[in-house]
Image (tube, rainbow, N blue to C red; front, side):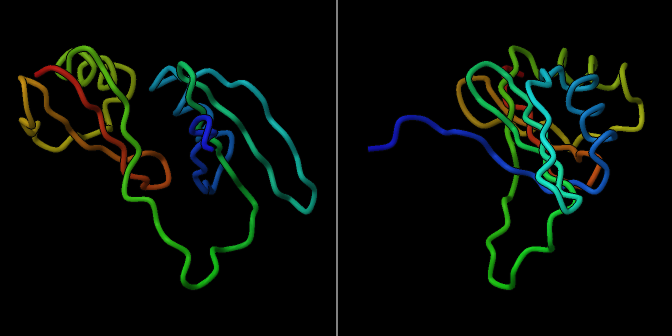
Length: 123
């Protein structure tokens, strides 16, 4: 039935700022931009086989729409990844690393529109 996870859509308030953040700070690749008319813009950013779809200019969510809690990115080493991101954007702050299992853990931080992002990897 299902073949793969196609993409995760994130509503953003400033497309250029969000593309800059996800490409420059997190290293995703801008694969495609589209304008749907009526001020709605889409940008598809890739990392491996997964895609993140940024959406700007769309109507506000309808009452009852579910909210995504966070988007997680796998990294080899949490301390290295955190330092690399902080070197690019010193304003980014992380939660305290949380040990989960087998020497791996996670930290959380926020994207440009307050979206909750997670790094998951070796502590």
